[in-house]
Length: 114
Image (cartoon, rainbow, N blue to C red; front, side, top):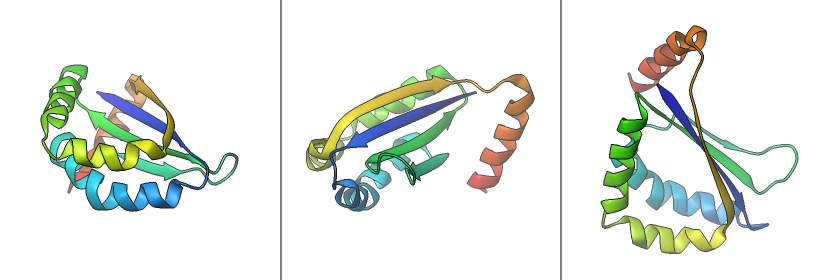
């Protein structure tokens, strides 16, 4: 099991606009291919232009398959054209839970998807 963390630094003042377009247009596209979000957070203390979302996958191969389907979605370019100018930078990390936490993570995902 892996968790993908995507951290976006937005241009100052663009978080509300980004979030509105993301929720209305981007999230339905992403969920269609990536499944349900594992987490989505907006920074509360420190820089006010950071957002982070988490996606969980059974394996790196599953992630690759889902991301390829996302990249091929014909609705994605129009959404990206709207929100990409609001993004200053992006970081992506792939993390693996240690054995003692994988059971907890699987239970959390199962509960979230129920």
